[in-house]
Image 1 (tube, helix red, strand yellow):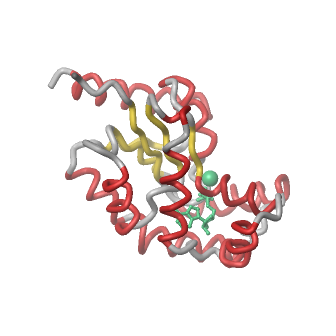
Image 2 (tube, protein in one colour):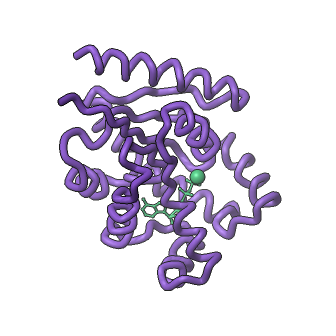
Amino acid sequence: MTDTTTRLLIIGPPGAGKGTQAAQIAQRYGVPAISTGDIFRANIKGGTPLGQQVQAIIERGELVPDTLTNEIVADRLTQPDAAPGFLLDGYPRNVEQVHALDNMIEGDSLDAVVLLEVDTDAVVSRLLKRAELEGRADDTEEVIRHRQHIYAEQTAPLVELFSERGILVAVDGLGTVEEVAERIATGLDSLLTSKAGR
Ligand SMILES: Nc1ncnc2c1ncn2[C@@H]1O[C@H](COP(=O)(O)OP(=O)(O)O)[C@@H](O)[C@H]1O
Ligand SMILES: [Mg+2]
């Protein structure tokens, strides 16, 4: 039987607009958008044991330990709404997490990866604006710079790995939400169609 699931990931530096685009992609492909950052923030807000465990780490802009993050994702992916597939946002974020995801899933763990490319200086001002609107504790300039540093060191290397797997769709993240969404849809459709033909 052919695999009819759609497993997607959106990746890119902090402030690239992943969350905004994730919602649109998820709707288009009929899969849930799963954001580890959103899961952690909801737990912090709700004062759960997990929230208490990760709050200080997130406020410093550090990564939550892999074992904990992997467990959260593995659990989330067994929920019934993820049966047709998923769009991950914020996970995997390093090589260790890629291996963990590969082990969670039978067959190809990801069908396509959208890389949202933006200029990091441009996104700092975006994030500072968001901080005024949403008041995220990790959106101070110092923490933003630290998160970008971690992205460059730990997450950016994944791009080559996904490119080697032939599943990377690189998209210019500059423009209106609609313009970027259109580019993503075009790129994803063509990759997924060419894969389906194989
Ligand atoms: N996969 C992950 N591994 C470890 N920590 C994570 C992961 N996803 C989110 N976090 C924690 O949550 C914070 C916010 O994540 P996220 O909302 O994805 O940020 P952004 O979208 O701004 O890049 C991260 O800085 C990190 O502390
Ligand atoms: Mg986000």
